[in-house]
Image 1 (tube, helix red, strand yellow):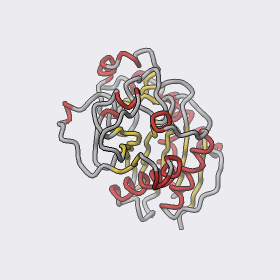
Image 2: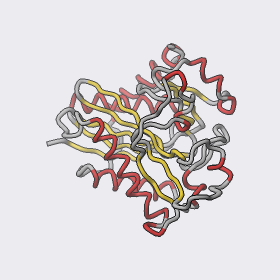
Image 3: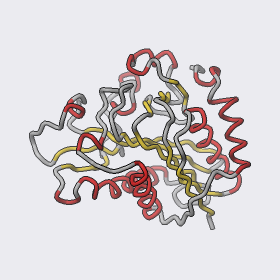
Image 4: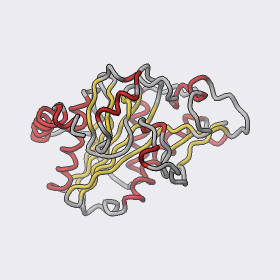
Length: 271
């Protein structure tokens, strides 16, 4: 039997957010507790993928003044600002802990199910879907920003119409599919962490990226969005979680990780 908890957090710093995610992964491995967490960022923050070079952040001028952290997961850089971020930590004995592709698809399908009514249901001119194609780019050709990359399983939106003007924000992208959700995974002693970001509105620190809400005209508060997303994920994964705060012992562990690892230049600039 897997113990579960749901955490809907207040906006926090990048170092804290990354430290809590790692703490929850360790907790899943050691104590077998599954946690779904939804959170935001207290200031515009650029998170680098684990394998990215720190110096590459200079490629993106709009975010050069932003705080920078490094994730424990791979992928492209993400400008966290006007978005909703989630993390899901599952212990080794959860059925999906070893089915990484199924976990990725299931969580993204849950986001689609939660967002579909906000787009207008079956009558909407917009379609949300998971990409079924891998990127044709090599690793060194991939754009710096995660939301400018396209990978199998990413959630994208497009119009049902063949020829449209999707608005100023969406028009700035180079693809007919506008990516709004991507995720990455990390494993620890059989447990798995999956986290990702839903691009909700355009940030001044990443003006080339179109947010879903403003592009298609969704009027929903962050609280409404968090409720809809968490309920959809729990339903899709057949998890029964009660909302809780981060326990004091895990808060202490996260504080140490935030101070000693994620806020340190040695970690952020390690490559």
